[in-house]
View 1 (cartoon, rainbow, N blue to C red):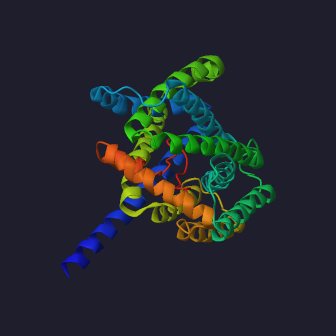
View 2: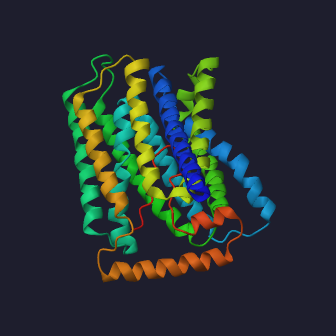
View 3: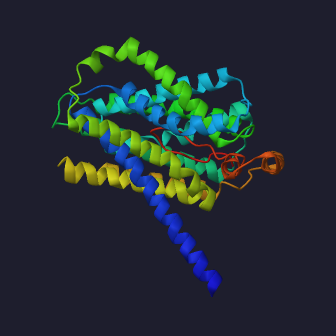
Length: 353
């Protein structure tokens, strides 16, 4: 009886943390959409404050360890550069598309990672995983159809399909970053990865702001509302990253992926009740189809498709045990299991079968 009570409490805690992750993601999306609606176009600056906050927290921890980086610095620089471009495209999409379309279209990351890991890392997926991913793609195509048929008449400057294209391009960057993270976490722990990504992210965004966004930034009126929105976006994204490892460690990616779907419903609530805008019925159908696809994919994450997949799992299991023996701290255990996080501004998925 005591064990059942303990399990029930643990499940409730996981569900609560999962909803915190979903809410933090929705809060960050809401802040970005409000910034765009106020006529401010400064996506690089938004990302800069997120990287800065992460660097202020994780870089001192890395220095305190007094350990030399296990991966050459230029790999972190490359990942940070790609990650910055992904965040730029994602936040820029709010200038043209709606919060509901953007939050659901980020599921394209699943498709790109499957393709890239299949060809680059030799990862093999089962039939059911392909079916789940294909179902997600079908749902995401419904979002595109919805945006094509229902242009935002309330704001003629909105170009929904252009915003959708920016999101899809951003998910390619996210997928590349996720693969780089998956490679890196097998050789080191989460703190080094985040610290170095954040440090180089600050440098890359600062340079690009000076080159591309300086005029837009000079035109920003830093009212208390605008400062609050930038601060809220940085805090929400930081909270998203901080809580995500806990959920993955306690429950795995199945419940985590399903929890992220709640953020899409938060987006619907924001659009309907705060923006007083109607949501096309195709969006709700798309949400249901994507949810079914993610459930199919998540329930078959550990199902090897063939003998080669079983061999890959065996090697991965050896790497897990080997990494755990050489890791220090609780954060190492999470990353040694190959759970790939997307650091900023987008959805997170565990995409290794």
